[in-house]
Image (cartoon, rainbow, N blue to C red; front, side, top):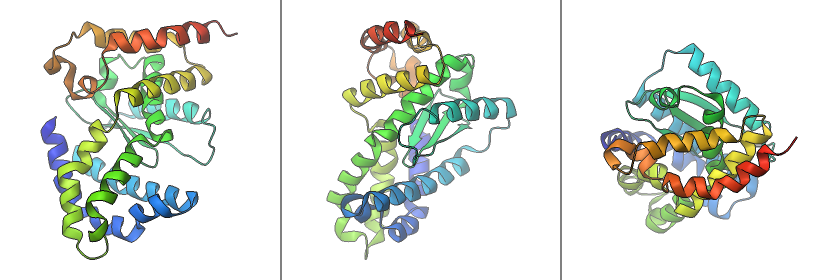
Length: 249
């Protein structure tokens, strides 16, 4: 899995710089209007998503594509900010994995979908969790802050330094940009959206119980699960909300 992000990061270092410079994503994200910041976020996400698709290759599974599209559509209908759009698609990865890119581009690995037996209630919580990271702008703000400090002086004249930033840190941030509090916040918001979209709140607990049964061995958990708080902590935080949402008519 580490090679996955390393190689993708190298590709981004070469290919993503012209688009980033053209969209002025750092400046608009920091000092522009909300509309300009949103356009910059979407431009960056569009480029990252294109490179991710090229790197992972297509997943020829119409049934999975239909399932993810339907789940994403139902969850998106429950997002308060109607200006936001989300797209969820499958990517090939031997390890269970999911990614949320700026601009609402969501990816779920075929192995992760298989791992949770493609259960809609569990996948709805997972996708809602990733959507919450986009809504809360966790990775976007982390990337903005880091980029502004490290490469502000190079954006208009020395693209090589910006490329180096992406190779060394850009995709790493996409994988591990979230703090413990951010992950727990995404759990709660993702669960609320899943319940609002008509999915069983208990699906979140079933999903987390699957993780708990893997134990605490990082090699068994994989990088995606290993980067989150312990499943027992996540379940303890969500249990009261699950009961509350389950009791609603």
